[in-house]
Image (cartoon, rainbow, N blue to C red; front, top):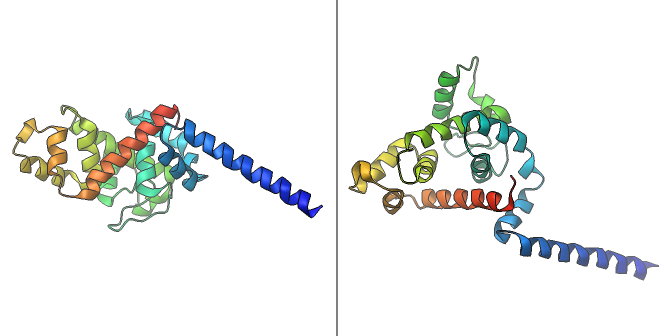
Length: 201
């Protein structure tokens, strides 16, 4: 009886491993699929909010979700080393811009631990950055650099390129002095493309 039970458990485990291997083989990016499994069940918990608020600001929801994944691994109570808060790791400065523009009343920084508030403020800031760089050859690269390192540093890197207003995304990437910012941009674009290839958030 015990031997039959162990045989059954072994078959179930092997079937699970074969199923997982099949999912990885069919995945547009096996490495990112494994990362999805590591954040389960949180990785789709905020999808409805992401879609709602991405539509509000006319931003790609797959991009917003990629930022949430990179910034917080879907942990709404996360606090960054510089005081960034929540799912999109929104700073108090960025939140104040959002509060003023959206005429939000009675805001306190701890409100950024609320998922809807955080995604609203973070997506607002992302949209503002995308609009700021919309005349560039690749506005997303500039916007993500700004989201990660701040507007002032992006301006500094543009100056370092000696290209001025003609600076391209490639020029920016060549002059970014923070390896973490380059990795950040690459990770988010890869994650967004992963969502696009599989056809869902």
